Image (cartoon, rainbow, N blue to C red; front, side, top):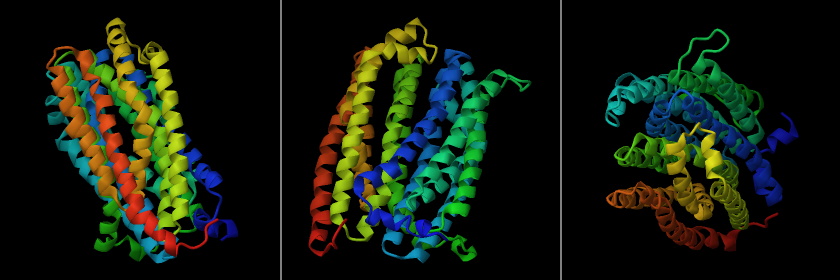
Length: 461
């Protein structure tokens, strides 16, 4: 084992903060952008089948998002547990957490496989009576669920690589999966080069092929290069104590993203009452927003192990410094997204083959919704900081209030006006409520967790 490998994790407690944060975050930001391309590229190519196919993919998104919620949320719990254990010098605990994380990834796959067999048809029938949209949705979602093992394993190994400071390898894993998906999408959707024309099911097939190749790449890089973690056969036995600690952070993360699935389902039900075009516009917004916001989650993936490690090592000054740096970067990214959406919404919509009706509705929608981009960077980084400090319930509360207790009720109330354009204002309203909560919770975390460590903190670099 090289000296560099043996100190990959410990540098999170000693390296200069700016270079450290961005050396971890930039590869993850790039890889998360490519991750966002999974859904964005699917929707772009599917839009050239028909608007009905685009609406179907939008209606399927809540379950797809739920799948990612469990995969990423469990990975986040493992990431925080492994990083904190390494910060405390407890390598055996870190090894056990990583092995139990892979076991949990397999369990999650089984659950979604069963949903793919029994739940997809009732789910699509609950959302629309249009038989064409229903069939496209069933075709797409069945493939995503039945072959979700690649998604689960890929997400887990990425978090294990990031937890030990090897985000470059995590980026490679994402790039392999995303590039495969982009290449295979048009081939399988439209039946190029002798492949059968699979339409919406082809988009799903391209996604899962990319996920499996990403998972195989990630496993190879983890086993070959992740020398801070060692797999032993006995560590793969499920340990109730270890799983409990993983899900202390993981469940709030899962719940936060799952809340997004519930919100999307409710919004689709509200918007379908106006038109399937409104659902398609909302779906396009969600894919575009994911592309703008994904770099922030990459930034969080770089920040989270730094906070967790220095929390375990009792270095409060490094915790506050990395949070401040991440917030400045996140706000800057979202201001760029706000400007782009305000200045050229029609151009963005045209990428998705938008017709005249969709353009007319979508330009207004994107300009209104994007006002919440101004503060969303602060809120996302603050929520990640709560998780890294073991206060995931705070992040969950913010997500619940924002999406279920403010956004959906506001959208429903505004829908009573009969004007679909008023519904879009529910997004800035919900984000303003989230800003207030995040500010109060962040102040509480500093006062009760970070500041008390100051008196006993070792010298920091």
